[in-house]
Image 1 (cartoon, rainbow, N blue to C red):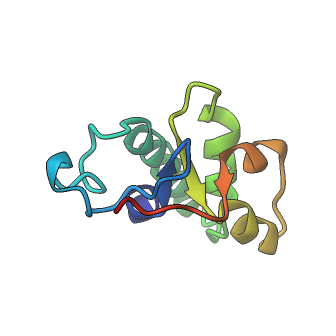
Image 2: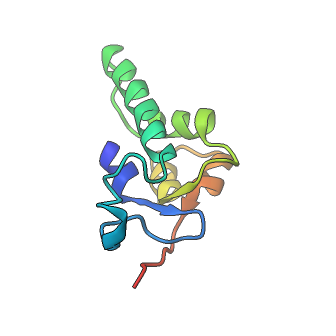
Length: 108
């Protein structure tokens, strides 16, 4: 789950956050680089742990809760194909359109 926030996110303007920028010190795994990714990943894990504790199978609801409760206009990243994956499991919401990106760019 946390890898999704590290490796399936983009900047708001659509650039993939990956390991291609040598000046950014492994920025996909750098918790300070677009730090809201790390914060939301922690929230998603907390929701997941509660679901597991309650013996509830994980199916994406934890991602939806995370984005509904913690994704704001100040959040600095988008998640690749988030809406597609959650819609496939029966989840929807306006926040998914805000946080989703289907087509991203790679820095050269």
